[in-house]
Length: 482
Image (cartoon, rainbow, N blue to C red; front, side, top):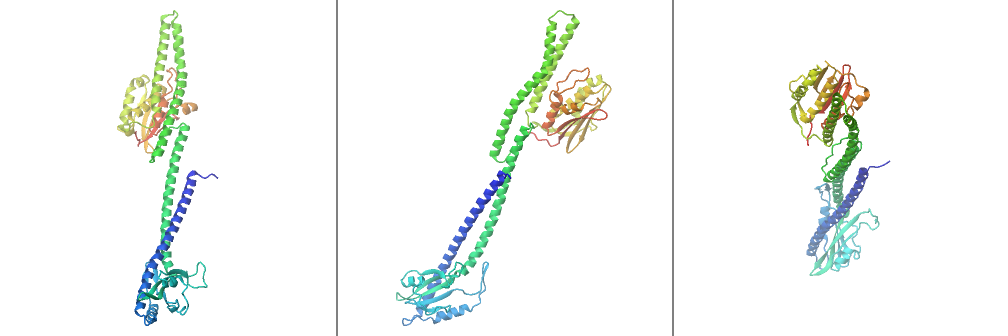
C-alpha cells in the first residue's frame, strides 16, 4: 500500500516533534529537580546554622547541652500542621536533627535511632569538623540501598566556642517530601507539553492539509489542461505555489499556442480548399471566350467563394480571440429583453422574407449579469441558425427563464428534426449541414456560442422536440470579471 507524501511528512513531523518535546520535558524536569534541591539545601543551611547558634549559647563546661533542642523537636513533632503548599498538603514536621560532639559521636538524635553512634566518617560530620562545608545525600537506612528506596539530604553546621569547633549539628530532610513538589510540577509540565504537542500537531495537520490541497489544485489544473478542458488558473496564498501555478499557466499558453496554430492552420486549409477550387476553376473558364450570361455566372461564383472565405477568416479570428481568454473580460448588468428585441429588429428583413412569426420574451425588462456584447453575439448566432433552418411561415420563439440560480435562453424553431450525429457535433468547429437552397455556413457559429458560454461558466445545448429544434444557453448570474 502506497503512503502519500503528506502522510509520510506528517509522521516524520510527529516523530521529530514528539522526540524534541520529550527531550525538552526531560531536561526541564531534571533542571527543576536540581533547582528544587538547591532551594531546599539553601533553607537547610540556614536552619542548621540557626540551630548551631542556639546550641552555642547553651554550651557549658565544654559539654553540649541538648535539653533545649530535645524539647523543641518533641513539641514540634507533636504539632498538627495543615499547610496547603500549592497542590501539596503538609501535615507534620518531617525535618530531623542530630548533634555530634568534637569526636563525631551522636549526642542527640531527634529520631532516637542513632544516639551514641559514631558518625565521624559521615561526610557531613567529617567535613564540618575539618572546617569545610559538610553536606551529603544518602539512603535513609543502610540496609535499603535500592534505587527506589528512601533517601535523605543532610546539611551540617559547626558548633563553635571561641573559634573552636566543638560539635556539629546536622539537619536531615527526606527527599521524598521534596519529590512530592517535584511530582506535582512535573505533572503540570507534562500537561502543558501534551497540550502544546496537540496544538502543534493540529497546526502541522492543517499545514500538511493545505500543502496537499495546493498540490491537488495543481494536479487538477495540469490534468484539466491535459484533457483539453479550459481550466481556470488556481490562486494560492503561498507565493511559491502561486509562482508554480503561473509557470504551469505560461507553459500551457505556450503549448496551447503551438497546438492552436497547428490545429487552425490545418482546419483553415481544409475549409478554404472548396472556395479556392471554385475561384481557380471559374478563373480558368473566364479566360476563354464565352457568352455574357455564363461569364456573369462564373463571376458570381467567384464573388460567392470570396465572400465565404472572408466570413470564414473573420469568424475564425473572433473564435481565436475567445479561445485565448480564460475569463469574462467585462461583466455588468444589462437589460436582456431590450438586447433580444434589438437583435430581432435587425433581422426584420430576413424574417419578413420567410414570413416568420417570432415570439419575444414576455417580460419587458430582464436584468442579467454578464458580458453584454458576447451574450448578444451568442443569441444572435442562435437566432441566425433558427431563421435559416425554420420553414417559410414557420414560428420562432425566444424564451427567458430563471433556472438553477442562473439565466436560461431558449431559441425554438419549427424546423425538421436533426439527425442524432448533428445534435452531438453541432458545437464542433467547422461542422455544418447546409440547408437546401442556402449558402454553406462557416461551421463556426455554434462553436462561437459554446466558447462564449464557457467564458460565462455556462452551457450550450441543442435538442430535438416534437415540434422542432431547441437551442438552449445557460449561465449563472454571478459572473466574475478579470
